[in-house]
Length: 287
Image (tube, rainbow, N blue to C red; front, side, top):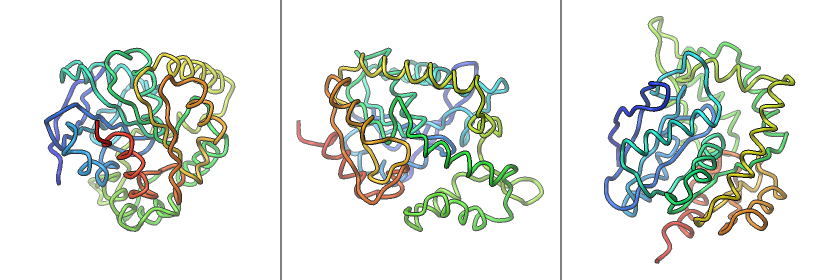
């Protein structure tokens, strides 16, 4: 099943790319994480398309969406994109599925608009991050300061190193979807370099921004009343068991936790079948 693609307007006059697998029933909109793009959901989407109007968004600075000349890549700006997109498409009540960065965006939206939420799935993300994950990602970014590659296969080796338990099929798909060919024949990431610079920051201002983001995330979670599934990879280095338990047991009004085995942070790529089982039990159960 191949999606159709559309251009939609986000905040700050940016054009964003939207993929759509089906057009009937309650909308289910998927948001990818840092460095990925909407087609990271390509294996999962066909399974939910018969049950939901299934969509995925390339978030600003990623994939085929516009880059922001002012580098506004904070969750609040992306939340504004999501508000504009859902308003334009008249998605008055929907399910959001967000991985990592996309999960933080989904949390802010759901906390601000609880009446519009039919359900929420947060994939390996919480208000507070296990410090091992960001440290690992900073190391991956530092290892490729100017990421240009001679072939898709060259980049696939990088993807395989960064996603050691992902299937060869998932690695090949990510490598193909995350690159574009330049005029000189080399390949570069479909990603604004300013995003990499932002993630690589480790200074007092960046830490202060993260502290405010943590507070905003906990507050937003407390406003969410819809059924919410927190999906954690069993080997995650981003979402600790303690934070996942706190989210579900103490903060969310109707929270549930699923731990997917043989998966790290990129749960849907590391164990697609396990991820599908977890979400199907939540979102596709009768009634």
